[in-house]
Length: 233
Ligand SMILES: *Cc1c(COP(=O)(O)O)cnc(C)c1O
Image (cartoon, rainbow, N blue to C red; front, side, top):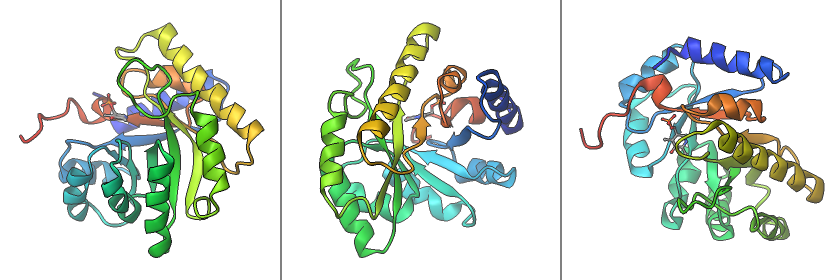
């Protein structure tokens, strides 16, 4: 476990080593299973972006967290019947993985005059954990997304997200993250996408590797908060 300051410094050094500007990587503090007091303590140190994985847990905690300036990121899979909660309470979604979800979100956002920044969740590894769309399915998803005029005005596609191999392993993790970066570059050259410039990749055990491969957002939980308390504790 490190202080936020130490992690920010480490992120900056990793960016520097990769020849990238110091402020090119954002820290998303993954606060799942952490109490509101832990979120408030980090917010008091200037942390703005927090990531949650479970809708019910997040909705229960949000009213108990500081109300000013927190930017909420949703990281977990979204069941379609929960789409409206994501649309109503979050600023970013990292796990958009179907047109059906995009349509459900867009309907809600339109009705409530809101917008959402979205990353497409990609299952680079196809190792059975099923985190998102496969790289093969990505072009078809984008064609469908861009063909539906109701989506882009409220759901801003900003890039790709993936989860690296578990456990992290230098060469395999780097390959996975490089594949995500190349896929994002291919999307930008093939499709008419604007502001599609974010790569959410890297967690406590592999964020240094992800930054070397171009991550613009790292999602860090345990390294920042310590081990997660057991659920229902
Ligand atoms: C839990 C989680 C994280 C943070 O993981 P740590 O290992 O605690 O840093 C990041 N991204 C996603 C999608 C997660 O579910």
